[in-house]
Length: 26
Image (tube, rainbow, N blue to C red; front, side, top):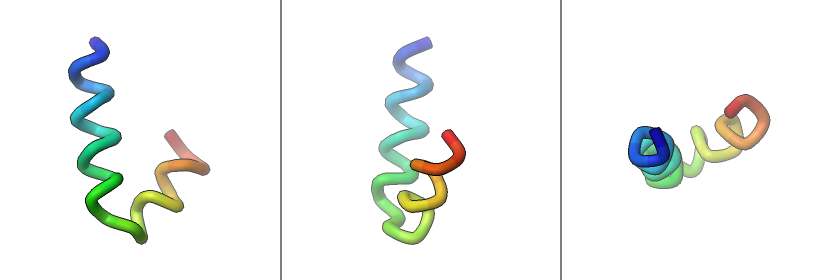
């Protein structure tokens, strides 16, 4: 479970534009 979340967060961290959106909507 944690592994999936880590990959998701990493994919969003790579894109600065998506990072801001990901923080508001996890």
